[in-house]
Image 1 (cartoon, protein in one colour):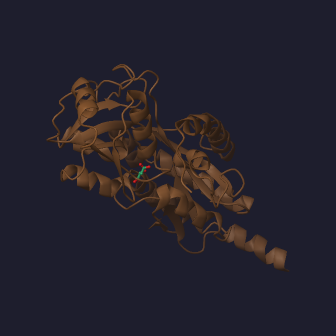
Image 2 (image 1 turned 135 degrees about the horizontal axis):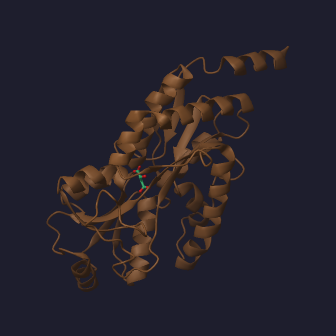
Length: 312
Ligand code: MLT
């Protein structure tokens, strides 16, 4: 009888709102993507998808929360490349990205931009390099903690130019951006899902993009690669997860709802406005996400180990 009841409740899923956990602060780039998807996903599921911002430790607190949540489809998770970099960044991690989750699918690829507060003295990338080389003790670089993609981007920047700056961790780049706009910090590497409107409005200085090709929407902003940081490429790819053991029929419904949401014309338009690429259908699958996650763990592990940074 128990198994039968479980099967029926799987078919009835969802019977109450679904919590979508976001591992960074409200208003920041991951939150922007999550809130954009939540409404059409909720429509497709026939229940609300509610956002919960569980912040701290570069996204690892949220990942732990989801890994330990009941595997019933009522707690799901949106995370980015941080899911792949955390195993190398943390000596002790209380979750395993490859063992503790089911995979809904990849979602979107988001480029990044290297920015400064508007009145920062350097007016272009060359001036930035000479300024930070001579004033490194004075220059602050914001990030969203060890495990955040802003941290990874900042680390790559500092290691490629051979300069260590004062890094200031926040609970997300939402609050970091507030301080950048307010002039309390100097530099930030952040995703276009947050930065694009501020760049377009001229509220910040932008020195380069982290993709190997320029962005169609910012044709005059050079890549960091073409400005001398050879091979500099950081993309904040996003994936959607559920706790390990979430039943297959529930996972199927979540995947179907994600696909419907990403076809929504509003979502497509907004992602396009934010220079972000919705992944092709073959990647928006459990296997597509799992394969990409494995490849990214393999790619970033050695880079991070070589850089010698760990949290305890
Ligand atoms: C955020 O949503 O605040 C960002 O994704 C943080 C980051 O990883 O830089």
